Image (tube, rainbow, N blue to C red):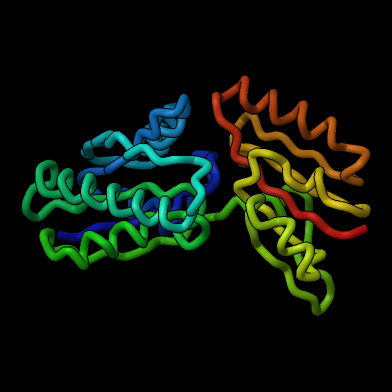
Length: 248
């Protein structure tokens, strides 16, 4: 069985690469996760991408996503268990819903290489050996790239590094000396708890019609960011935000 993992960008239906559009048109069955956490609009965005870019016949199978603890004591173990549960669910759908000779596809938010589990899940399925599959990966525009473009940023200082991390790890990165950080998956705005002065370039739901952007000294624009997050949540039912944080 052929499986294609297609990066579709951070949310805008026009932000796909030409390679991604070609790949979409080679897929017969798309497996789309329904997270069942009030973010079903993520399914409709993927459906809109298919309507806009696919010229032939295709099917979409919505797959209920296995639940997981969002604040576990052992984060790594919880995520690995979730990946295993996902692999079992997708394996069943691939066996039952994809016919011989058909190609299955996964529409991966952003880019499959960055804070996404699809590659790991597909590797688990392949390692189990129940479904004989081969897969390829088509890169997508990440929210990090879109953030830099929207704010007209160079992410690194001249000759310097940039660290990509999560809100969960932000304080540890700063304690280790990091002062030029791209932060993802930070629903609690952990940056507001950091000591010292920081500049921030923030964006939410990038590429969508409800995109929000804020930039400035963190202590000055914190309220603007919180208000923008509320607008994004009201508009779509979900917020996916990313920001560059740089010590002032």
